[in-house]
Image (cartoon, rainbow, N blue to C red; front, side):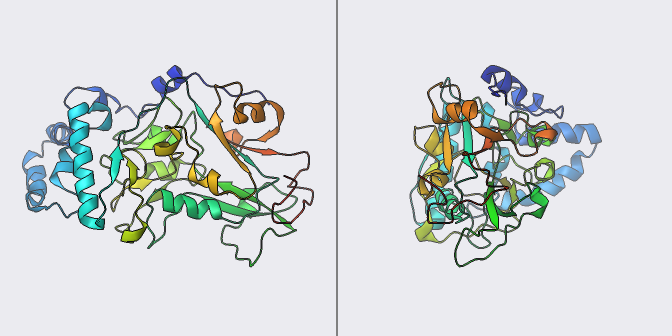
Length: 347
């Protein structure tokens, strides 16, 4: 397989919304208020829109949706003062709601870095520890529980994911008749989710991570429908997180608490990985099945894996160019039985 190394500048240029609305985020001073005003002028319904927005005056700081959020600038437009104000507002809301003062920052991508994830199907034992570590790290709702990672239990002899089962319940894993395939956001170089967003609430960063501005998302769910990997989650209700389970180490574009009516997904734990740490799902994996790093670094584990291992790209035919790869050791976990001990194979 040819190593799919992308040019970061080209990705940044093409990572904007391809739906014809990216100019809204690039025009100076644009806010959702002026966005609506322009839309109103186009439809001639100024009075109707004004009447519909009248209830916003009665919103309080305890509401998930506030006037401040409504008129807040798009992430790409914010200067240092704007971001500081936004972060202070988020911190105050978190403290009021959970009695925890968070350490919330806006962590930027590093130059010369393009993150890639590689997962060893030979070693994965389907324990789902990655699923739960992700939930805890990223302040995901516990009731209902939102999970970014699905682990499919796959029958040996097939790689058709339609035959996979992510509702399997077993006292012990792995099963000798199955292998296991975790699926999460593939951080595509050609992300269809970005192209369909009508307000550019989601975009691709220079380090390859596709992110979401939760305050800009309008909850249309077009991105969810466009994703071929089932990677996006929608908050149908207000997320519920016990106060003692809040992770106070937060970033604007990653694991700050979300609100009802917005999308969310895996973001490669950017509040960790952009500071040299590993994703939470990798750190908890008991078999070493997960590898993560900078594919632009010729000495990184992920670069060596892509150059030397048998690599499998999920749904390669759809042309998304994912940065999430599957690979095998010498044994093929799809067609051959592998050891079912506590490590799922040789260390």
